[in-house]
Image (cartoon, rainbow, N blue to C red; front, side, top):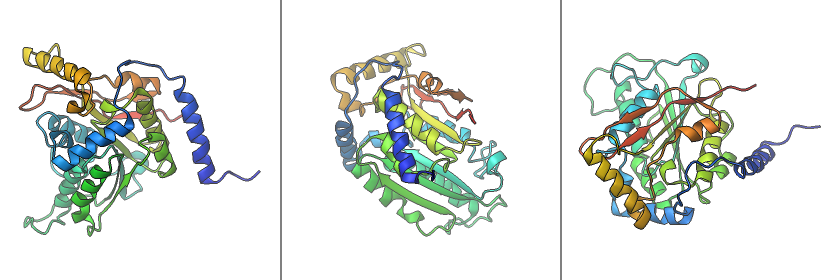
Length: 304
C-alpha cells in the first residue's frame, strides 16, 4: 500500500491526540477561561498596552525569561551575546529553528533577534567591531490565538524582515485549539519549542495538547521544550505570601484581571507525557513580589 499523504498523517495524529486527551490525568480542578474569552482578554491587552502583554520586559516576568533563554542554549554561558556553536544532532545545520507558542506581541522574539543582530554585527547603528562567531541563521515562528496580538507581533518584528540571517513568521491559530497547529508545522522541524506565560491560562486539556504539539514538532535528538510561568510564593516571604493569596483571590472573583493566569506546577504534566526534566529554576522577580516558575529545558525521550 502507498504511504499516506502528509495531510492524512496529520489528520490521523489529531484523532489519536484527541482520544488520548479523553483519558488524561488531572492535576488541577480549577476552571479556566474559554478560548473565546481568552482571545477577547488578550485582544484587549494588545490594544490597551496592558501589562499582561509585557511579560518579557516586566519586573515579574523578566528574570524568568532571562533564565529561560540561558537554558535554551542560544547564547553563551558567560553572558556574552554570542550564539552557541551547533551541538550534537544539529552540528551539521546552520539554522536554529524556534517555535514560540503563545507569542503574544512578539517581545520575546524581539529580545532574541535584537541580541542576535548585535552579535552578528548586522545592526548598522552598532559601530563596534563585530565578534568572530559561529554564523547561524534563526528561524522564529510565533503562534497565537489573539488576532490583535498577532497583528502587534507582526508590526513589532517587521524591522527584521530585511535581515538575511533571520526568518520570521507569525501565525494566527483561529480555533485556539493547539492540536490544529499540527497541520501547519512539519514533524521534527523545530529545535526549540518555547512557551512563556501561556500554559498558565490554558485548560488542562489544552495544556496536554501543547505538550503533544511540542513532541510532534521537536527534533527527537536535540530538541528542547522551554516553559515559563507563575507559581506559588506562599513560603518565601510575607510579601509573596500576600501577593500569591491576592492573585488566587482575583483568579476566583475577577479572572480576566489577571489574564486568566493561575499559579501552577508544570512538572507533573511534563512527566505524565514522558518528558525528561533537565532543569527547573524558580526566579525571584524584580520590583514585584510575584513568583515566577521557569521549567526549561525538558527533552522528550527518543523512542524508536
